[in-house]
Image (tube, rainbow, N blue to C red):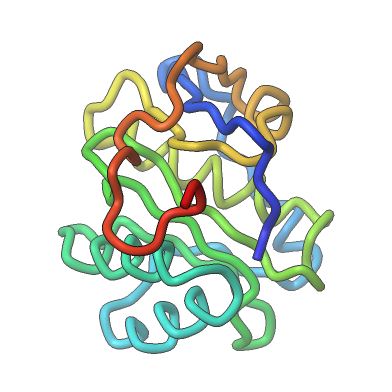
Length: 166
């Protein structure tokens, strides 16, 4: 599971100022980034649950209920190495996004981020919120994301289940 900062924040992204969609770097490394397909749902959701956390698997299930499916995958030689979803936690929210530990550092996360945000722009959104962003600098660097002050826990308040604060 990826580590999150001690105080997560939501990030605001201006979709109308996105960098151009160029995922050629991943293609050069044999990685294909594409929209997820309905018949792969069990594979993608199972992988997300195993690699990350059950909550992200639940959000991925929601992405499969959308039309078009609001989940993108990254694969190398038929193996899943990353995923990204939008409109799962709430409408207008991007995430979760995750890349297998062994595949990090090769531009896959950035490619998934841009593909997902461009899809949101194409669907008419002007802004996206990245909820409880982990590596805030990643979103600032790639899409000019701005941390929203006092945004934690925001829409994630009062979850069901055990609580970390006792």
